[in-house]
Length: 178
Image 1 (cartoon, rainbow, N blue to C red):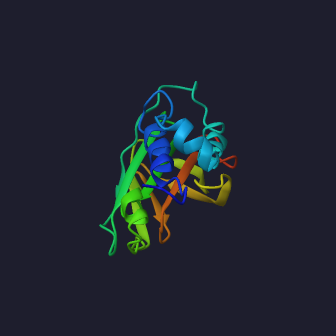
Image 2: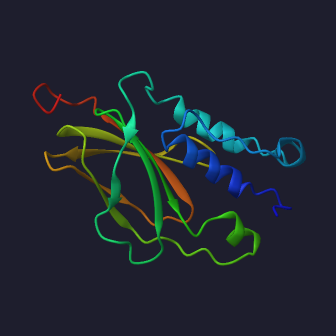
Image 3: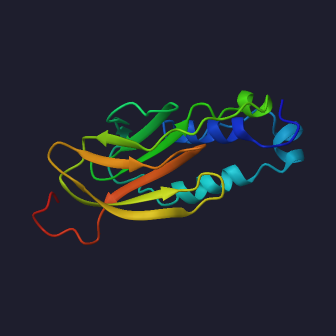
């Protein structure tokens, strides 16, 4: 089903499981007949780079409710997020980018620019990082402000997926939520 070795199902399964609150990433059954012969190691490395930045032992990580403020005008999203009450991480996926659509060479509609809304973090300034889930590494970093009612994050057009990490800003001053 993946003669070209694109690894879409492997990639999506790793990220969805790792950011759903499981005790790690799901492992695909077909290592000897798929992962190794197709040399599909990059998805593991990109996820490893991201998870190495997460302070897993600082508090209890629970589901983080992050949802579109308004439904996107095009496409649909799946969002898996976790928060420890001070920081948050999430994997945001264009649901049309799946192994079957890629295998059948169907056009993958891009999800339009979308505002995402979340609560459950103290008011204050945060550093928002967007991560490349295929190659690893931060693609964009910016400061956002959370209020008592939550935080709004602007998601650019999305062809495949993106991971985000939201941490207290280094410029946070005493009395601003922390």
